[in-house]
Image 1 (cartoon, rainbow, N blue to C red):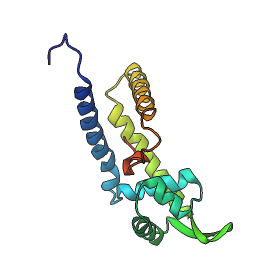
Image 2 (cartoon, helix red, strand yellow; image 1 turned 90 degrees about the vertical axis):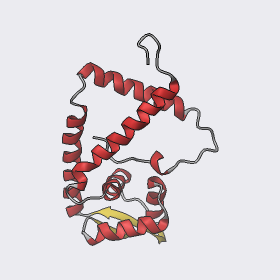
Image 3 (cartoon, one colour; image 1 turned 60 degrees about the vertical axis):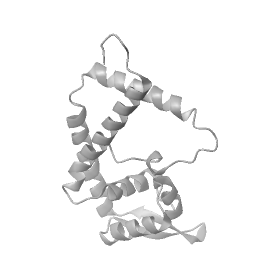
Image 4 (cartoon, rainbow, N blue to C red; image 1 turned 45 degrees about the vertical axis):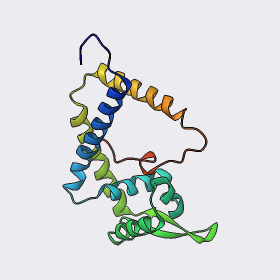
Length: 164
């Protein structure tokens, strides 16, 4: 590509997709080294963010099937990180609550995320970080405004693993 010709939209899209893929793989490393799956990390973050969500709402938020969320919650509950509690407003629903051990685990997740994010973006100057954030926000708003009323979110549209 010559330096006097700006990159095409296709070139930018391809570069962004490759970078996103690499960032996601790299972001998962500190969790995988501890034997934590990205799904487990995302579940814990989603429960914390939502408060005490219903399992059905969490399933939709994470973009997974009912069977998947049940299996995931079963595993995390067995570790003592979450517990199922009845929904006082709907006896048929179950809500999820983070246990004391789960709050400690979330502290570890956040500390890992912060340290790994600094490692990842440490190559950028403060001005480059600000510019990158501005460009990404503008691009996301531009694309989100063109999704249309009939587009349904995919699994990756809800929350991706913490990019560090």
